[in-house]
Amino acid sequence: MARKYIIRLYLKYFFSILFALVLFFVGLDFLQVFKKLPPSANLQVLYIVFKTMNGIDLLFPISLVFAMIGMKIALIRSNELVAFYALGYSKRDVIFPLFITATILTTIYIFLHLTSFTYAGEYADNIKKYNSLINATKNLFFKYENAYVYFEKLIPLEQKAENVRIFETKDNDLRKIVYAKEAWFAKEYWHLPNATIIQKRFDHIIVKHRNIDTLQGYKPKILDSVYEGKTNISLLDALYALKLFERQQIDTKRIKALIFYHLFYPFFAPFLMIIIFYFVPVSSRLANLNLFSFSAIVITLLLWGILFTLVKLSFSGVLYAEVAIAVPIVLLGVIAFWLYKKF
Image 1 (cartoon, helix red, strand yellow):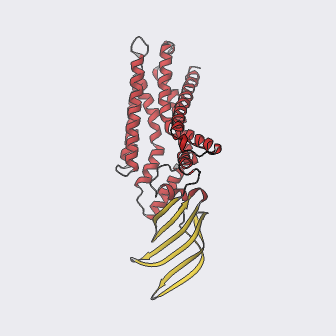
Image 2: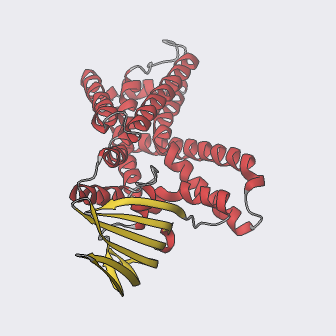
Image 3: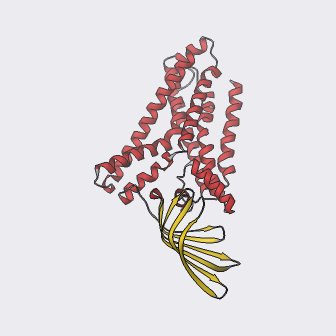
């Protein structure tokens, strides 16, 4: 019964804090950009919806920690925490259901990043900048096997590209040029209808026109996000891109950083909860609760900021993802486990 009560109370604090933080985040942002938004009420509502999802994405992990701090302060002030210990419950008995609940919520949060939930912030920015959900990437240039590809215009949501040129080389010599006014992505290939093919054969130039299927696996969102240096790519697309880039022998440092960010970074919250809980006073008589809660919040924000800075450095390629993301989270986990054994 006590565990169920603790879990219910924790979830109550978590959803209340998450709601309050997201409401503040969206409200402040809306007041700042209101004049830049399109006059359409539908687009304004969509902007608020996508910005809310973006706020949940940013604030979810830290809300887990704040909920634990708030709940524990409430239990101490009401003397319920002392009552739990008096009934024979240990610190492990109290923190364990919180840790499991936070871990389950974190796992759900990670699974959300397998979906288009990840792109909510991008959709909101598109509405603000372009008065539309659709954003076109211009002048995209990348390498594919032994060819160089140029998209004058890429529209990811429509899975469409305009004015596509493919330059195939061999032994540093240009052998073939493929041109198409439009291209569509479907069934793992880019389809170039009625493409113009200019091919060099010995001393002759041959011009042909036919439909071409090429660029296997190069999904529009991968091209738009990875090659344009964006970091709001879903975990599923990131894993797909990693496999694709390894096959194409392309540098995978940044895509690995994205994967490590999705898989490791969120777990700083459950580990930090154990670390902070170790220092939670049993009674308000033994410590200044206001000072403790202020210190816990500042430490949480400070650590959150440091980890986020390391993540950004790994995105830029300055640090390896294993060093900037995985090592700090694993270190937090080791410290949390060591403190948990001491309860």
